[in-house]
Length: 94
Image (cartoon, rainbow, N blue to C red):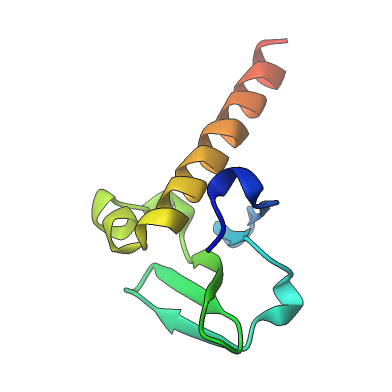
């Protein structure tokens, strides 16, 4: 996986499902998925490299869920969630 600074991250949240998808590459490149537990699913390309991640229930996300995510992907996810939270908070406070 590329360094986090070089990755164009896409984050999609479906509030009606409470599902969050994080893409590190084009979603159309997904060839396989690998559940890490009941709440975390890795999205893999044809070479089985991680290109994305699905959190099945963001509201139920636990520390244990986060710990099963490969370290490089975990860093990107946490940074994306921090940015999303900051933007949301800024809009609410405006």
